[in-house]
Length: 115
Length: 116
Image (cartoon, rainbow over all chains, first blue to last red; front, side, top):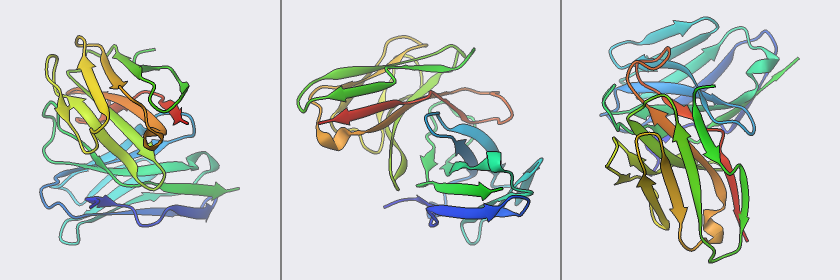
């Protein structure tokens, strides 16, 4: 049973518009959440994270929102650019900074930004 | 460049053959991980090593073994490959104070394995 779910396998948006990627989790012990971006033939790379003590974290064009009561987080990309086309993985962890803490990943959402 | 290096990048095996996937990191990280990526399943943890000298099972350990050779190297072995092990394998490492995040993984570029 997947503890982290990304229910949209793919998303297509127009360049310049907002991209919203969603993620749901079931484990109430998760207290740290991350988004990774993956291009073909490359490993995932860290994009942005949020601790459960916050409900929003922003980094340039990327903003992550966390709704703990709904066990839901979302990644907003504004404005979307063609170079943002990639697979995005949501990940969650119990505890922060401890050696060996595992990340549980969602199934990924393929974002396509059309010029 | 600093990071995680995986070898080989591609491999085709026959059912029943064995092989070892190699992983090395040069960031002095304590923890290392092996994941597999399958369509729609995301990244699933096979084994991890919290620190040198320790290894533990993840979500999908069956059919695999690992060795934490030293702090830098963490290998994944398939003793008798099966078609169900056809996947893309990623090694990752993590340590405190890494990059923009106070906690996150650095991934290798992956090994694409096909078992026929």
